[in-house]
Image 1 (cartoon, one colour):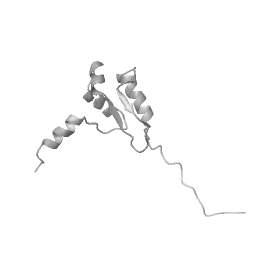
Image 2: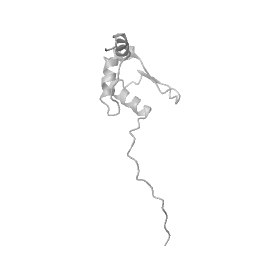
Image 3: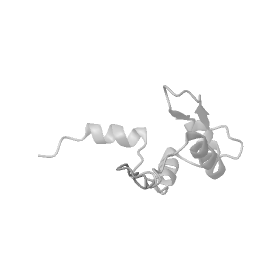
Image 4: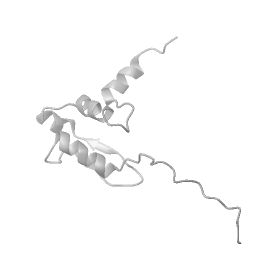
Length: 95
């Protein structure tokens, strides 16, 4: 009989990773079939999506609409527009 004291843990649960390419695809499907309102440079050092608010407006949408869509996805707790962040910064701190 050969035995060892080495066990292995079970496989960890899925981490819920979000791939930006998938997110871009979802956003384009919802807001712009022409896929022209998002600039994504696929740069691992700068994983930011740059949205074109003028293009969104011509399609009948706003940045708030995009934020609401993102909040509806399971992986996001909240999403804010730049205007909402600026408004929050302008408020006096709570005492």
